[in-house]
Amino acid sequence: MVDVEEAATGDIVDRLLWRDAQQMLDRHTAAGRDGNCVWCGWQWPCSARRLAERADAVSRRPWREAWTLRHDLNSLPNAMTDRGRADRGNHNHRRYAD
Image 1 (cartoon, rainbow, N blue to C red):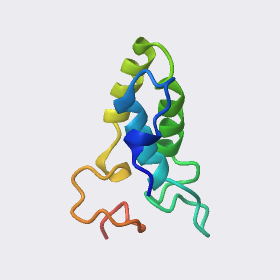
Image 2 (tube, rainbow, N blue to C red):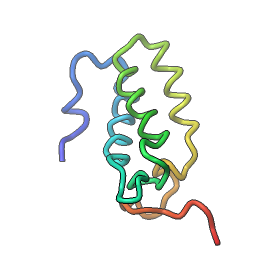
Image 3 (cartoon, rainbow, N blue to C red):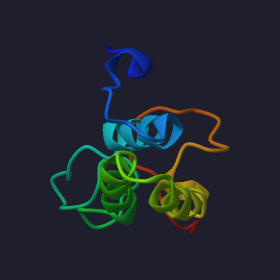
Protein backbone atom coordinates (compact mmCIF):
# COMPACT_ATOMS: atom_id res chain seq x y z
CA MET A 1 0.00 0.00 0.00
CA VAL A 2 1.29 3.45 -0.90
CA ASP A 3 1.60 6.01 1.86
CA VAL A 4 -0.69 8.87 0.87
CA GLU A 5 1.62 11.52 2.27
CA GLU A 6 4.52 10.24 0.17
CA ALA A 7 2.44 10.04 -3.00
CA ALA A 8 1.31 13.68 -2.89
CA THR A 9 2.74 15.69 -5.77
CA GLY A 10 3.98 19.26 -5.63
CA ASP A 11 0.86 20.68 -7.28
CA ILE A 12 -1.39 19.84 -4.31
CA VAL A 13 -2.71 23.00 -2.66
CA ASP A 14 -4.85 21.35 0.01
CA ARG A 15 -3.15 18.17 1.25
CA LEU A 16 -5.91 17.27 3.70
CA LEU A 17 -8.59 17.47 1.02
CA TRP A 18 -6.38 15.49 -1.37
CA ARG A 19 -5.76 12.79 1.26
CA ASP A 20 -9.49 12.51 2.02
CA ALA A 21 -10.23 12.26 -1.71
CA GLN A 22 -7.67 9.47 -2.13
CA GLN A 23 -9.13 7.50 0.78
CA MET A 24 -12.65 7.79 -0.65
CA LEU A 25 -11.46 6.89 -4.15
CA ASP A 26 -9.81 3.79 -2.69
CA ARG A 27 -13.09 2.74 -1.04
CA HIS A 28 -15.57 3.55 -3.80
CA THR A 29 -13.59 1.78 -6.50
CA ALA A 30 -16.07 0.09 -8.81
CA ALA A 31 -19.53 -1.23 -9.43
CA GLY A 32 -20.44 -4.72 -8.33
CA ARG A 33 -22.36 -7.25 -10.39
CA ASP A 34 -25.61 -5.49 -9.54
CA GLY A 35 -24.36 -2.15 -10.88
CA ASN A 36 -24.04 -0.61 -7.42
CA CYS A 37 -20.93 0.68 -5.64
CA VAL A 38 -19.06 -2.12 -3.88
CA TRP A 39 -18.54 0.07 -0.79
CA CYS A 40 -21.81 1.89 -0.13
CA GLY A 41 -24.29 -0.02 -2.31
CA TRP A 42 -25.61 3.04 -4.13
CA GLN A 43 -25.99 3.21 -7.91
CA TRP A 44 -22.63 3.51 -9.66
CA PRO A 45 -21.01 5.97 -9.90
CA CYS A 46 -22.20 6.83 -6.39
CA SER A 47 -22.30 10.39 -5.15
CA ALA A 48 -19.36 9.70 -2.83
CA ARG A 49 -17.22 8.59 -5.81
CA ARG A 50 -18.20 11.65 -7.84
CA LEU A 51 -17.48 13.94 -4.88
CA ALA A 52 -14.10 12.26 -4.30
CA GLU A 53 -13.16 12.76 -7.95
CA ARG A 54 -14.14 16.40 -7.65
CA ALA A 55 -12.17 16.74 -4.38
CA ASP A 56 -9.09 15.27 -6.05
CA ALA A 57 -9.29 17.87 -8.83
CA VAL A 58 -10.13 20.78 -6.52
CA SER A 59 -7.28 19.97 -4.12
CA ARG A 60 -4.97 21.33 -6.83
CA ARG A 61 -6.90 24.58 -7.33
CA PRO A 62 -6.91 27.82 -5.29
CA TRP A 63 -7.81 27.44 -1.61
CA ARG A 64 -11.29 29.00 -1.95
CA GLU A 65 -12.51 26.16 -4.15
CA ALA A 66 -10.93 23.58 -1.85
CA TRP A 67 -12.59 25.14 1.19
CA THR A 68 -16.05 24.92 -0.37
CA LEU A 69 -15.59 21.31 -1.45
CA ARG A 70 -14.26 20.29 1.96
CA HIS A 71 -17.59 21.44 3.40
CA ASP A 72 -19.42 19.26 0.84
CA LEU A 73 -17.21 16.29 1.72
CA ASN A 74 -17.92 16.65 5.43
CA SER A 75 -21.65 16.82 4.72
CA LEU A 76 -21.83 13.26 3.34
CA PRO A 77 -23.97 10.85 5.35
CA ASN A 78 -22.06 8.41 7.53
CA ALA A 79 -23.31 5.50 5.42
CA MET A 80 -21.16 6.70 2.50
CA THR A 81 -18.02 7.15 4.58
CA ASP A 82 -16.30 5.14 7.28
CA ARG A 83 -17.00 7.67 10.04
CA GLY A 84 -18.54 5.92 12.99
CA ARG A 85 -18.33 2.45 11.46
CA ALA A 86 -17.14 -0.17 13.93
CA ASP A 87 -15.74 -2.48 11.28
CA ARG A 88 -14.16 -0.73 8.37
CA GLY A 89 -14.18 -3.71 6.07
CA ASN A 90 -14.99 -3.39 2.40
CA HIS A 91 -18.35 -5.10 1.99
CA ASN A 92 -21.89 -4.21 1.08
CA HIS A 93 -24.09 -2.70 3.74
CA ARG A 94 -27.86 -2.63 3.79
CA ARG A 95 -29.15 0.90 3.72
CA TYR A 96 -32.41 0.23 5.53
CA ALA A 97 -33.35 -1.99 8.40
CA ASP A 98 -36.09 -4.56 7.83
